[in-house]
Figure 1: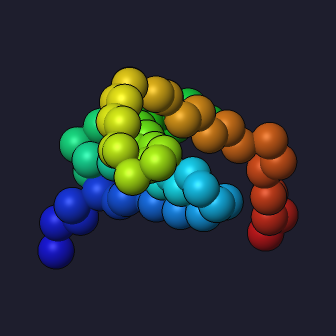
Figure 2: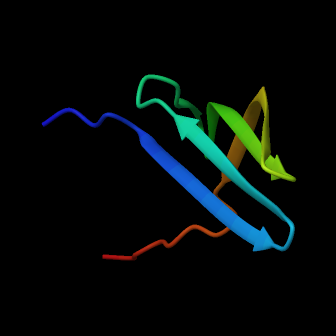
Length: 74
């Protein structure tokens, strides 16, 4: 089975303004080198103020690193 990536959405409502943030990270973007993985994603922000929607998108990068290794002696 092939992964299609993941999408994370945060929705916040504080009268009279509401906004949501969506991070779309396609499965094709992970770059793994050693103990580090990087994901290139598109982050979209939608703000609704006084009934009018405003949209903004930008590229962002998440970086994950291994900080502890488990070793087993046999």
